[in-house]
Length: 132
Image (cartoon, rainbow, N blue to C red; front, side, top):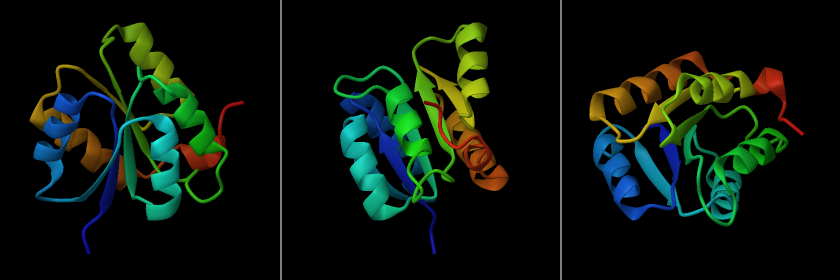
């Protein structure tokens, strides 16, 4: 059975690109914002989630924190996607408990490697339990 990945992304071009990179190896579910992403994550119970950090309605940090407090999905690895590639941003996101951080523009090999590694290593989230 193929692993299920939830892509939470408000930009349709980025969402299409992620789907193109991953659809051959994984079952893909999409959400256009954090609220929709939480609902779909609870319903679908994905094996991995990617989330854009900068989104309207509910950004990726708030999504990540709420997912971490949800018993059904708190163990799911979450990969951050950001336009801000500075080392400080990447280190901050990793220290929060994100499994990986991908910087835009996205490259196929980087996405595939981050997803495979996050699925293999599991999640830091189970230990962290969500940030208040």
